[in-house]
Image (cartoon, rainbow, N blue to C red; front, side, top):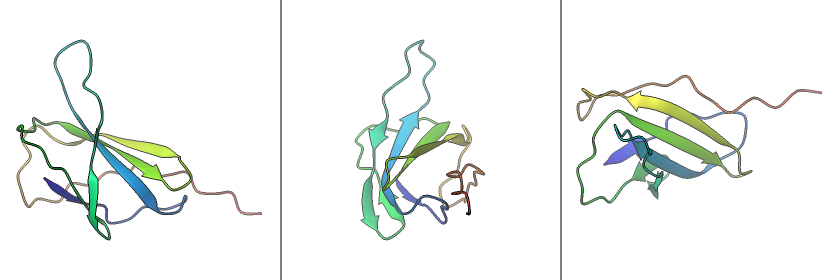
Length: 94
Protein backbone atom coordinates (compact mmCIF):
# COMPACT_ATOMS: atom_id res chain seq x y z
CA UNK A 1 0.00 0.00 0.00
CA UNK A 2 1.26 3.46 -0.84
CA UNK A 3 -0.22 6.78 0.26
CA UNK A 4 0.42 10.41 -0.55
CA UNK A 5 -0.13 13.22 1.93
CA UNK A 6 -0.89 16.17 -0.33
CA UNK A 7 -1.04 18.97 2.23
CA UNK A 8 -0.68 19.54 5.91
CA UNK A 9 -0.56 22.89 7.62
CA UNK A 10 0.10 24.52 10.92
CA UNK A 11 2.79 22.43 12.57
CA UNK A 12 5.79 21.83 10.34
CA UNK A 13 6.73 18.68 8.46
CA UNK A 14 5.42 15.16 8.88
CA UNK A 15 7.80 12.71 10.53
CA UNK A 16 5.38 9.84 10.89
CA UNK A 17 2.27 8.34 9.32
CA UNK A 18 0.53 5.46 11.07
CA UNK A 19 -2.31 3.32 9.80
CA UNK A 20 -5.08 1.66 11.80
CA UNK A 21 -7.13 -1.18 10.37
CA UNK A 22 -10.66 -1.19 11.70
CA UNK A 23 -11.64 -4.21 13.68
CA UNK A 24 -14.96 -5.65 14.75
CA UNK A 25 -13.38 -7.03 17.93
CA UNK A 26 -13.83 -5.11 21.21
CA UNK A 27 -10.08 -4.46 21.43
CA UNK A 28 -8.89 -2.25 18.55
CA UNK A 29 -5.73 -3.20 16.68
CA UNK A 30 -2.56 -1.22 17.25
CA UNK A 31 -1.39 1.52 14.94
CA UNK A 32 1.01 0.32 12.22
CA UNK A 33 3.86 2.66 11.26
CA UNK A 34 4.30 3.43 7.57
CA UNK A 35 7.68 4.26 6.04
CA UNK A 36 8.41 7.43 4.11
CA UNK A 37 9.15 6.38 0.52
CA UNK A 38 10.04 9.74 -1.03
CA UNK A 39 8.86 13.28 -0.29
CA UNK A 40 5.13 13.13 0.42
CA UNK A 41 4.81 9.43 -0.42
CA UNK A 42 4.48 6.88 2.40
CA UNK A 43 4.36 3.10 2.07
CA UNK A 44 3.34 0.11 4.13
CA UNK A 45 5.10 -3.20 3.67
CA UNK A 46 2.51 -5.71 4.80
CA UNK A 47 2.12 -9.38 4.05
CA UNK A 48 -1.47 -9.44 5.27
CA UNK A 49 -4.43 -7.99 3.41
CA UNK A 50 -5.77 -4.67 4.65
CA UNK A 51 -9.44 -4.50 5.51
CA UNK A 52 -11.06 -1.08 5.34
CA UNK A 53 -12.19 1.24 6.73
CA UNK A 54 -8.74 2.62 7.45
CA UNK A 55 -7.68 5.49 9.69
CA UNK A 56 -4.42 7.44 9.59
CA UNK A 57 -2.47 9.22 12.31
CA UNK A 58 -0.19 12.04 11.13
CA UNK A 59 2.73 12.98 13.38
CA UNK A 60 4.47 16.34 13.02
CA UNK A 61 8.11 17.12 13.73
CA UNK A 62 7.02 18.84 16.97
CA UNK A 63 5.36 15.61 18.14
CA UNK A 64 1.76 16.70 17.65
CA UNK A 65 -0.66 14.21 16.15
CA UNK A 66 -3.92 14.39 14.25
CA UNK A 67 -6.11 11.43 13.28
CA UNK A 68 -8.11 11.05 10.06
CA UNK A 69 -10.61 8.46 11.28
CA UNK A 70 -12.00 5.98 8.74
CA UNK A 71 -10.84 8.18 5.85
CA UNK A 72 -10.55 5.14 3.57
CA UNK A 73 -14.07 3.62 3.34
CA UNK A 74 -14.92 -0.09 3.38
CA UNK A 75 -15.58 -0.08 -0.37
CA UNK A 76 -12.33 1.63 -1.33
CA UNK A 77 -10.74 1.20 -4.73
CA UNK A 78 -7.07 1.44 -5.74
CA UNK A 79 -6.17 4.62 -7.63
CA UNK A 80 -9.02 6.65 -6.14
CA UNK A 81 -8.22 9.78 -4.13
CA UNK A 82 -9.83 10.04 -0.70
CA UNK A 83 -9.97 13.33 1.20
CA UNK A 84 -10.05 14.25 4.86
CA UNK A 85 -10.62 17.64 6.42
CA UNK A 86 -8.56 17.04 9.56
CA UNK A 87 -5.53 19.22 10.07
CA UNK A 88 -3.15 20.44 12.73
CA UNK A 89 -4.40 23.49 14.58
CA UNK A 90 -2.93 26.63 13.12
CA UNK A 91 -0.53 28.56 15.33
CA UNK A 92 -1.93 31.76 16.75
CA UNK A 93 -0.68 34.93 15.09
CA UNK A 94 0.69 37.60 17.40
